[in-house]
Image (cartoon, rainbow, N blue to C red; front, side):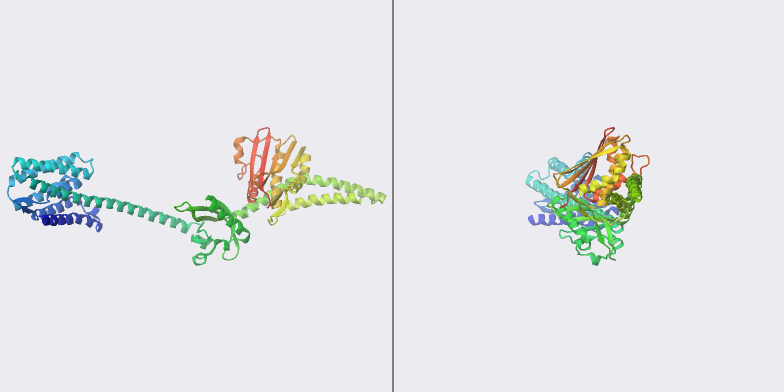
Length: 538
């Protein structure tokens, strides 16, 4: 009997597994009325189970109700009735007692159909429990009403357990398949999204003009976008495995490495500008945004650099810078001409006296006046003439004093006084003197224009505690409304009627190139305070 149980359950398991495996090879969604065909399959399956039934002590054991319960729970009443009808035909064919079999079958079908209608909100597993419970009650009812082996309850319990084991095995197989199917569906969906995402990223990376580079901790290139071929001329075989620092301008290598090493410590993205060598040998200005990529341990594993060629922008900025220089020189020309006229008048007068009296005791005075003229013209020419950028170590006080000397005529013409407060010890910075002088001239010129009735400008130079110095300019002009301060330095934004809005923008650019920053404080009718912070020279 145990062998018969094992054979029946094995064949039953095989027939339950077949429809679960077939959808892996075919797209069952395209098969019309697939659920009804599954009902027919389960009916044929139940017929085979009826023919595989075995008898013990005159009682017949089979598993035909196990697939019926499963079909009602998973496929609904229509497929369940098809399965039940085919199993009934097989049962009537192999044995007698038709009236009892038909009545019992009818009660079970009616009960299962009604239960399915009112249990749609339940999960299939809960429906199986309810259906098997109803089957057990109906089975016991039929045994007692029709006196079917009432004196042998053990055989009935054994038959119910036999059906219950079949239902459990079938439910486990189906639920396992359903969960695997759902998991597979999610994996397919995720894989599809991943492929779409990868395709989009590849489309962006292969068609963007930006240069995308992925570097490891040793600054070796792990990935670079195809745009390197169009922008810099390098093939994949040339760049693969090379250290990026070998292609960077020697003057920028130290700064580049310090920035990357700093990212491994502070783990924050940073922007950087450097010069990269084109395959033809010339240098290309790049602006890069470096972003760290963390691994599972939150340590920096790679750095992604997105770079853009800013060579044309740099040229435009240089043109703007020079244009603003010439604008400042033009505005200073009147004051400088007035300043030059005074020593020329002195020289002319003493030359005339010397001519009349043949007395040449005024040579020292004449030479000093001529030197003053030469100094003023030299300053004016050096400011206006385009020059190569050269960073030199300079005393900031000397730079400010030379700027103030150039503006002295403007101060006199506008009835403006200035006070310079500087620490006794010299303050050295590394800078391009003409660029910083342009910044100071622009700020002081704005202060002069803001003081129509004259006044005083306070200039203060001091060290800060964090290895930097602060240059402040405080005027007594008409001031700037608080809501307009954040916009100062924007291109073409100006508070003047005839201004271009480029002066402060260029000042911001120059200070940024010197690794400094510039801030403003102002109150209407009280004046404006401009503070520039620059790093001290090493």
